[in-house]
Structure formats: structure tokens, C-alpha cells
Image (tube, rainbow, N blue to C red):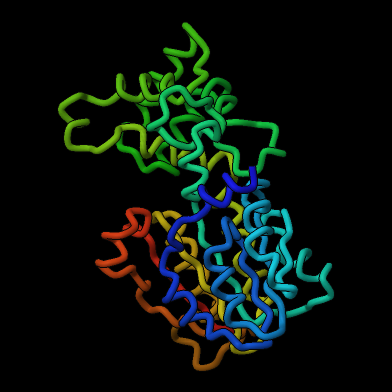
Length: 316
């Protein structure tokens, strides 16, 4: 099993060189990879450390197994199965109060997409509707598809999938599940295809892409966790420490962009006030006024990189 995991987790880390440059790694610094995956980024960070610590966090048991094996040769690497929402607790439990850098590589991993039984990919027709990033979670995508009301399905497909056919997709999901429970990715694909006009589908790419994204985000609470944890991660940084976040769709990027700007300039006083009276002070500065994008060469070599954006915040 371990040998198999090494193979499936061997993928190209997105924006690797850019992340390493932006983290400004110190040999004795303490760094956290909050979305460890197969430890692609973390392994390269470890190569640049001569002391200090690398703390890798992931909620996926398979990722923890693969990363633990890859990082075993580094005595200063600590691998913890948890959600990055618990980052402060994980770090404090290791006797650490502040860190020099934090990395998040958001979204679904290549391994999760490529492992059919995980149910993340709309390309795997016979796969079960699962989509859990953490198998300790009791609810699955199947529960959402078969249990949410039509209004709730419409909301998540509209808000998290940004699909213009959200209302019709929700309607068709409900219509189909009244006849038979939707159990596989193929079952859900059929409902989605029936909801979108064929002439639109020809120019749309795969019609299920947005709906699968929406259900995955809802199930795993991805946007809520990011929104709720952003301030805490910035507060966890040492002065001049950096938070690097790679996003893969506009919803994530919007949260990061807005959150960084707010921490750089939190003042709530009216623009005409001669002096600040609200007392809110800047936590640091946004390094990336525009996001760092992958090169054309990286996009050609790694399809997953095409939608990636890196934003960086530095603590004052």
C-alpha cells in the first residue's frame, strides 16, 4: 500500500519555485504546510532547513501516510493529521507560539481526483458519490445530492459552482432522485446533462465540473474554513513571517484577496477623518498586489497549474 501511495502522490507541486522564493526560508525557521498532501512543497522546504521545524498538516489519512514516509528522513519534520483550521492548536501543542512561514495549497489534490473510489471526479462514472477529504466525516456527497432540498441544492450550485444553470440542475437532481437514489458520479452526471441544453454543452467543457466543485466545497466546508482561519494564521506569524496561499478558483481567491487587504488596512474611520480613532492597526503588508501566476511552461507541463494563483502576506 505504501509503495502505491508513493506513486500516486508523486505529482508536480504547483508554483513550487515561486512559493520557495516568497517564503524567504531561514535555515533555522519554523514553517507550516497546512495542506500537506504528498509533501511536494514540504519536502523542498525541508531541504532548505538545517534546524528549526517543518509542521505538515493534512486531514486525509492517505496523504498523511505518504507524506510521513517522504519526510521520515528529516528529524525536524512533524506530520499531524488534522484540518488546517486547527493550525494554532497543532502548533501550540508542539510548544511553539509563532512561526516564520505558512503555506496553503487549496482545493482537491491530484491524488484525490485520480483515485476513483474517492468520488471526486466527474470522469469516473462508476465511482461512489463520496468527495470526503477526511473519511472521519460521516456525511458524503451522496447525502447532499439525495438529502438537500431543491432550494438548498440551487443555493450551493449557484454560490459555490457559479453555474448559470444552477436552478435547472437542482430541479433535475430532485426529479431523478424521486425515481431512484443517486449513488454514483454517473448518476449525478446524467441529471446534470439533462438540465443543460446540448448546444450549450458542446461549448461548455464537461457540464458537471461546476456542480461537482460546489458539492465538494459544501461537504468539506472549504470556504468557511478558509474564511474563519485567515486571521488566525496571520496572527501566528513572527514579524516578517509570510503567509502564502495558492487558490484554484475565484471564490477562494476573493476570500484571500479581501482578507489580506483588510489586515493591511483595517481602519474603519470615515475617509475624511484627519486621524484614526477606531484604533485598528495594520498587521502587515500585502506582498502581491496582483497574484503570482504560473509560467506558460508550467501550465503546459501541469494542467492543474492553469487556474492557480499565489497571494502572499507579510507580518509586520
